[in-house]
Image 1: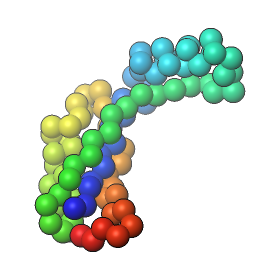
Image 2: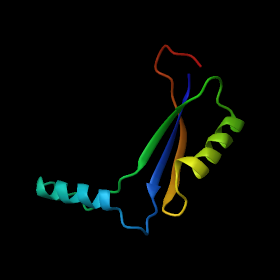
Image 3: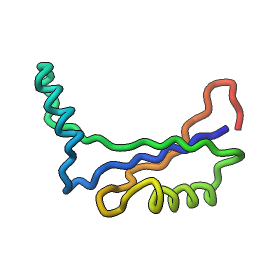
Image 4: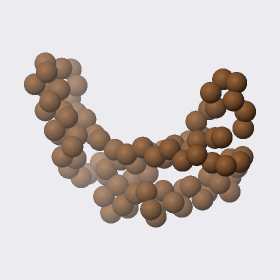
Length: 89
């Protein structure tokens, strides 16, 4: 069965306290080459059947209305994962 991945990130102009905490931890570990971290969400939605434009449009609608808070987050990606070798759709 195909899986659709939806990626959601905090809006760029907003403070990301989780990302700031991770960045601070990396600095304390001596990982100073990394200048910033942003923490988002990833949703994996398994689809029963074929993924077509209608399914992707429905997922976009869900991403905008249910999976993200449009006031503080942006949906930054929606894509279909490739099936593992030997698996068919």
